[in-house]
Image (cartoon, rainbow, N blue to C red; front, side, top):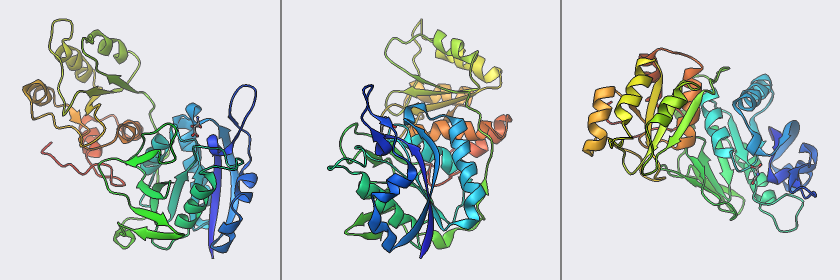
Length: 336
Ligand code: ASP
């Protein structure tokens, strides 16, 4: 029987009502006691690492989760992390960079409704996660939610209330869990070549700028005082304005000259960016050598930059690492 460690960090799944609103109060042992059926296929231990609303999740917490797994990696066959849904996609992506090539499954789950309610998705999601983490073919970082298994770099919370809150963006589901069975669509554990590797540094100085019509380029210059990298979420396949108050060319040039990183992405969720299509994107990308997120999710782009900048400051190395595919995060290999 598989030996699984269930790590609790808080979120709705572990929340109770209070006068001030829902807040995480249910312990890791209590969480496990709501899914007694899981004893049929795994032996689970628990660890109460945090008990927070995931609104408060930060890079230091991701490092804490990764190091808790590292310390216990040899003692368990798999790991299940209970987490709030709001920033779950960021944590799943961050762990995908911090823990690479893991032959053991590390599953992140949560729920839209607390586990102690009569009508809730929490028991199904937790049981499914323990089941998936106990499967011989499971590996790496995944989100398990509403019967779907999503690569850790491809998850996005797309619904605030429904049980099917998470989608896999620009990538198929790895598996589904139906009638207590795991059905794999991507069964590639045998292809794992490298041993598991844990990283211990992140640089949180990454900013996001979402363009709106009429945005002034001065905001970029302001951000450069506080951040080492900026992700610009532009429109459609990608472009930058050039109207009078929006001279992004000059503002970005200043960023690059200061040795900082600028990454272009799109605010459209599906299908990714391609800046070489329109004049508004192609010219500035070529002239300034901008990085582009292509089919990566925003959550993966943010955490990948934090991971890369935690390892190096060298622009060539940043470029190489950014376009390297990690846990299925980027597949669109344009000529960069
Ligand atoms: N605010 C909660 C959290 O992210 C929402 C949830 O878990 O569904 O912790």
